[in-house]
Length: 273
Image (cartoon, rainbow, N blue to C red):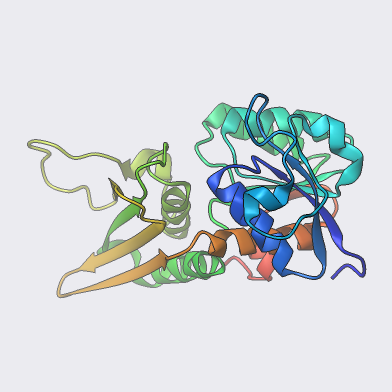
């Protein structure tokens, strides 16, 4: 734990998660918001972060370019969009700055760029920053190993109607956790849609179902269904602050780590089986 407060920047500060992150940093004593960035032309530019978070005045005004405030922060938290995140990573490389990435929806090529950046940049990258979800991923690996191929696996998730990617990054992380434990390749066994006469279920497939409606913050269920019984592991988030607090915890932890790619299991000290 650092002795002095970690200087944290928020990228996308005026967004739904950005505002939550501003509030989450204000809750802790060992970190402070030292910079805030939003897209050029947004009404938030030049505005004190207190206006965005509803808190007390901070003296930190939102700017439209991370490069202009690079000297102000140690770690930046980014919940934006893949192209925005990758552009930010390029700005950070070689600067000694650290980044916590909560952006989802990266394609395979974009992920390669992210992984390459981790060779010289300390990065925490997680599909979900909830502590409960991180524990759930550990439980899923153990359940899959114990149940084996005799149980069908189906993953369902629900989010608010503003979410643009599907399945969610968390649902995919859960799929990877199960697939890896069963020695399967999720790219080969995942089924993302069913319609019409689909035929009998491939026993080694992992199915996904997606709901987008209202203001659902995030719900995920993994179903293991065998003959005569079924096991369900479910996580429900009621408030985005759950994710924001986890991301801030990750940012504080990352402040003392060398270059590399980390996730929330590293932050929480949970060993992967």
